[in-house]
Length: 520
Length: 34
Image 1 (tube, rainbow over the protein chains, first blue to last red):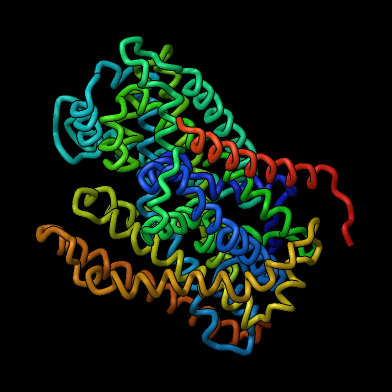
Image 2 (cartoon, chains in turn green, blue):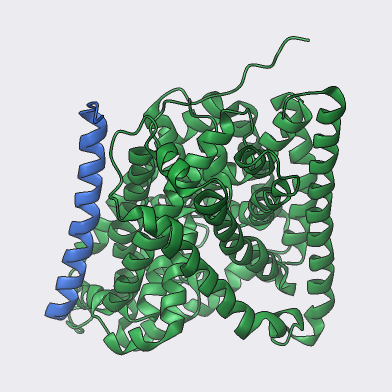
């Protein structure tokens, strides 16, 4: 049988765009500004940049390096890449299952949320919500669209489901064409486009001044002040430091397993040090410069200092899908502004969701020797069924549960495992050499002890604090309403089944290879 | 917006823009560092 030709990136800029595209997601434009505003404003940036330097950037280099290393052994997903770090260890590959499981779980609900942004960009162009001028009605519009209630705007979930089908199909088409022909081509167009959309919106918002002459203090300068004026007392609060660390994880897509997969398609001599840092810089530009200049300042200008606290604490989705359409409706060319805002979120969503699917597809391709086309079809069939749970049980707390395990817990756990494996099992000296192989820049020496000691200790403390404070209440579902408990329980059973199935698949794949005498 | 707010915003923006300029400058003027 002819040996399969391994997919690879077409250009250096392509892989950087793809990794940055994976990192730039809904969180940059919705989650970050809300987190910053709620956690000390400008002072939030102190723990944020400390976490970026001590956790985010080192983890970015770790994931790029172990991914490229594993790719040299023709492995592109967690189990195979971890196995290649220490081949004699029979168990190490099972830790890698988290690197497939986490992104898969996120993708189950993320694709659905992504489809709302596509729908809303059409609604903006078609003036579907242009007559709505208050929060309650816009909230009803969103709930009607989500199928959570029947009202004058929507009588069923059908429109949302149709947009979900379109979004899901688009994701699968991009994945079907592979790394070079699908993901790279798409990200090379989508990332600059979404940055351009974001820039136009940010400039427009920053030029608002104080649009209501009767309320001169409802100005863009004070809106920026709401976000950036530091409240140093917040730095004594551990919650603020955890929020900043969590934001760094979310925003950079580290600890998911997707960067590891993308980096596995690099060639042995390709740079990872500068490329990883460039992806970080692009993500931070999108988040701190563009993302922070849109939603919070605009909300302040149109709703004022009294209302913004409540609006910011109502959650990122409420701000994005309820408050922003109202604000954009007050600007000249509201259709275009609405289209730019939701179009930007949609592109950011797709570049992220395709990256979440890739580890599972790569796992099927590499470890079961099946073609990319078949792997995408199998992945599409399974995830399509799972997505329906998130769609039809949205109001039952299912999405929050998926987000916690896939998007929070697994991220920190996987990051902790990979940094320990890289710095301690693989060995820091070998690891340091690996990062610098083919590198276009030298890492500051301080990062050697940072990768070996500081990052793992930082992550272990975060994990330990979580276990100490929240493990039991979370497991016991203390904060879950009585009527939602059965749904949460079923979600947990499904998650366990997915995890165990992946672990069994790893065992089967390695047993088959052993039987066939394939060098692992 | 207070002076402290302006300082925090300016420092954050400067850090990120400087990082971006450094990275893209290195990429587009690739030279062998070893």
